[in-house]
Length: 344
Image (cartoon, rainbow, N blue to C red; front, side):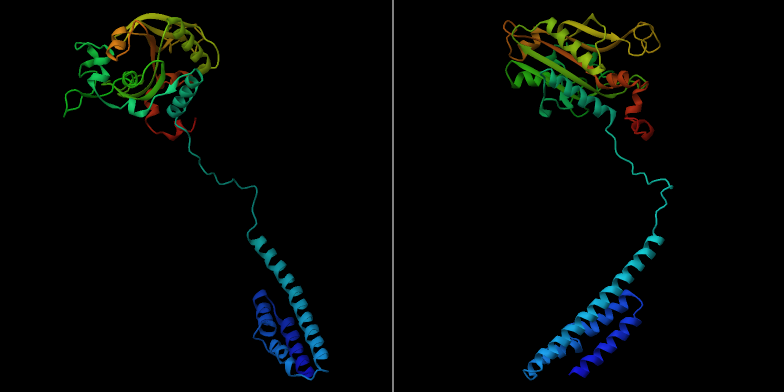
């Protein structure tokens, strides 16, 4: 058996030396050292040896096995390093080349603005109204009637509002104030909510107007709510949104659902009140409308105006975004031009 072991060893050594790659070396290992190899069969035959021969043959088998494994491992390391170096040379990276740009999505400026407005008014104590309280397809009752808008009011005309052809009293809401009405009907004071959303007006599309735009409405109803509180909330909102306190002015106005009503102007962002083309030389920019909730609106919603009072305000999201980011055309928000959107 010793002669047979030496013969197998010599053959294996020869083939190990002749192997010139990892695949050939692996084939030699499988041939001489695998479970089904002739060398392994010799190990299995040790049970038939004389007791005196078993230690001698066992030691020889182990010695040859260790020697062959050691040689194969050494040569395997040489081949591995050689192939790795060849691969690195073929796949080397030229760090002077431009990298591959993977474009990332951007939050739309309108979404960004709405999120910012909601965050500010949440900080001021307002809760976000539920979606069910402000449907975009609305009946006249909640879009006009319960907001104290008379039947002959020009806002009800088809030149201003989109009506549904299949139902005469169904409209695309022209303001997010319907959320205020539905909230007053669904809950009891105190009520302090905001409601952002899309609204629709039958407008001629231009740089300043679109027939689809976004508003955010606010409503606060409780005992002893005053105009002073309204001014405090809106002045703080302006400070938080524009980044610093800015001069404001409150002008008397008229809205059917508030009495008294005001329009709020802020000092022009562009010229700091000196007068420019953006503010038409006045130094002021109108940003929102507001007022104390009309007692008729409270009564129709089942709220006693002798006990409760409140204020409401509404503002255009596009207008606020245009002022903050110096955007001069409302149509840019809806054109999906990547050159515009990538700026935000």
